[in-house]
Amino acid sequence: MFQLVGQSDEIKWPVKVAFVDGSGKTIPKTFVAHFPRLPQSEIDEIVKRARASDESDSADDKLTDDELAKKVLVGWEEVTDDQGQPVEFSPAMRDKLLEIFPVRPSVISAWFESVSGQKRKN
Image (spheres, one colour):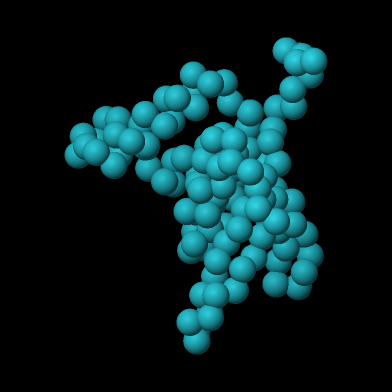
């Protein structure tokens, strides 16, 4: 049975980040992102603006990667500091995390996976 009520406000989804060390070796890291459960109309608008960013030089409709990542990353689990202590989510810490390459594109890819219904790979 499908219920219209009782949906959570957030979706928890794994974000896989492939870091490359100094020798060129890929080191996979994963954390759990909290994404907002957006209405379909808002998802459609994000997709439209993301496509406009790829196809147009007009600044009016463009959706930057930074803007999208900040909009969809509203919490996390399994993010730790260099001493293994959990890092509490805050907008400032989110912004700091998103500045570490390749975290931002990994978050965006994970969000698109979460809304497209693609199955998670273990």
